[in-house]
Length: 275
Image 1 (cartoon, rainbow, N blue to C red):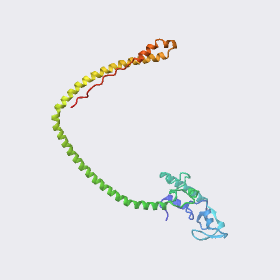
Image 2 (tube, rainbow, N blue to C red):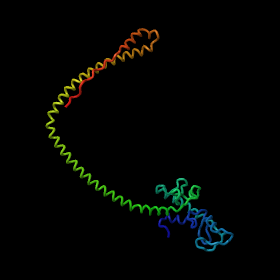
Image 3 (tube, rainbow, N blue to C red):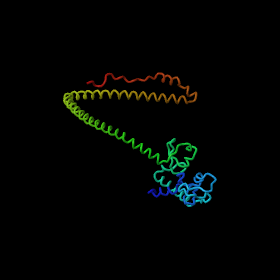
Image 4 (cartoon, rainbow, N blue to C red):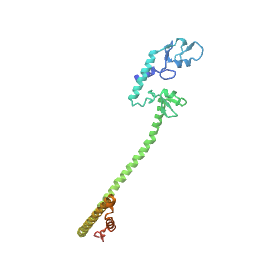
């Protein structure tokens, strides 16, 4: 039956009935049927000058083979249209290496190949079947996998429903507990407010005193740091001076550096106001 798709109809017309691939060097028999030259030669192996058509079985003369150039042109058009259609569908139906339509499927490598790939050393010894058959086979398997998956989905949805019920129940319990805790602490707040104010007042006084003492410590440390920096700068400059100038008052400089002693701030005793 002719394909409803015009492109598929054209592909059928451009396909050899022997090898089921696009015609290669097509020839026409006396009966009008067309075959690849290599295919018909293989069918007619032998010395006889008379043979039969593989399609209609009519007796024909081997020497009357006629090259069919018009059919060869149709084959090229069909190939180009097939490639355009495959590229238009996303390019998945085209061999990236040979730019041929992917028709066979290599079972060993689990990949679609083109006719050129099929004849190459990489796939020549492999089991290659039409891609439509493989697709149909896997489609059946995939459809078979849908049943168990749908059952698993039903179980998952049922479990989700139970968990949602538990979530709602738990949220209600938490809300009641939160309200109870808030009520108890509201009662305690009244009792704690006076104590809070007293502690804050004491903390403020302690803060004022401590900050004053810390500020004094910072001033003292800043003065000491400044003196140390001046002495360091003086020693660095002296190290760069000529020998005579370097030796001048060097003992005094060393003596001052040896007598430097950092006065650390006194540690604050006690801590923040305790409740």
